[in-house]
Length: 114
Length: 111
Image (cartoon, rainbow over all chains, first blue to last red; front, side, top):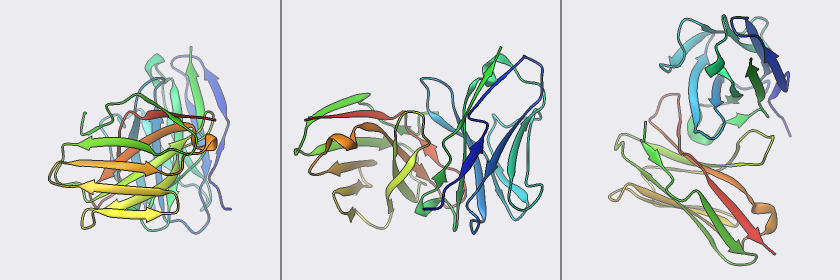
């Protein structure tokens, strides 16, 4: 069964450093998403991406965050200057037709900012 | 942001019995609703969805019921199996891109 692949599974970084979280969505999917889950809290929407541009973003997704689809297969989330409160599980997801028929999520990257 | 609420943090059910997971929402603009299951160290897995024009959708052992007037939906799993033990998230969205997730309910199915 096709799956969304995320790397690395765990990333530890110093506060203030830049991190790039990588995702390979399912190949025929057109919609791409990043969500995060801070430990013990809800899964929160960060950003959606379609047709090579951001289609929607949350208030969490400030100027420190950016997304890119650099080569037609990868979908990356960059955090420019990490803060302690960025520590969370970051989930990438993709869908063929939009969210109403369900996303396929990756298994997540655990980001720990120290 | 409390647009989607799952008020029961956990539920324990005997194997073979029915599991009923509940979800309430406040935003009347939501057009579709979904349930996801999540095992530890994995991402959420899509289970079943329902659009706002329906009141019931069934897929095997999983049935989702939507009561729009009460802004309430529920997921029924019957019969429950030990492998169903996981965290279940309710999610909702307007026709657009993002989903709003509830906080999740931990389901434990005892054998």
